[in-house]
Amino acid sequence: MTIRVMLVDDQVLLRTGFRMVLAAQPDMEVVAEAGDGAEAIEILRTTAVDVVLMDVRMPRLDGVEATRRICSAEVHPKVLILTTFDLDEYAFSGLKAGASGFMLKDVPPAELLGAIRSVHSGDAVVAPSTTRRLLDRFAPMLPTTGKESGPGQRAVDKLTEREREVMLLVAQGLSNGEIAARLVLSEATVKTHVGRILTKLGLRDRVQVVVLAYETGLVRAGGL
Image (cartoon, rainbow, N blue to C red; front, side, top):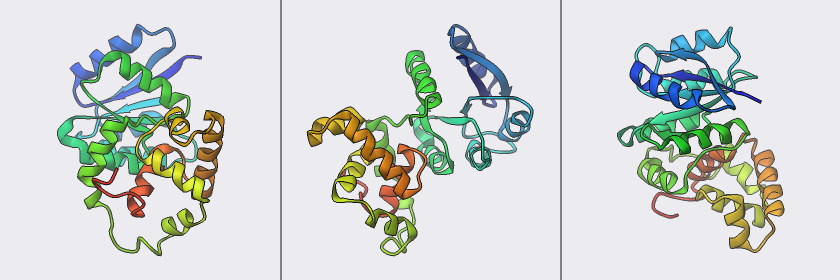
């Protein structure tokens, strides 16, 4: 199956570079390009796309708001945020808006291609080291009121002790295999726990688990 990719970036040269890398892949095709979020949303009304590579800072409509609007639709493509180190706060906002992950713009081609395939298959792209740096830096910007009594906290309270254990490790960016090794469980069992956590919390993917863990105070900046 060919992965239909859309490139959204106001820098034409950057889009050209990404298009060349993707065009060399037998399982990928760039089906659309846009110079800002507003144009991207317009194109998506008439073009079938599987994965959107979304820049953050763009004219007219930025990538965060574009991601929010795209992901609010009942059926929508996966969004992979592209950012730079000095725009980490926007990447975090993009994840909260519904993106399935984020990558740095200078990521090696092989990692970018792997991320696109992972997002397309339903996984979230959150590198542990990047996640820790990002959330340790910006967790203080999250709401600090109502943590104990909010809907997110009430949902977390419904988890079993083992599920909370697994959620904590997911929030640290560990893969299912790493969690299995840490808790001495089979990877299949961990996958089942993760699925139950997502269902109980009403979350879409592991990225949202990370965000909720910080918002509810289950984990805190510097505490991973």
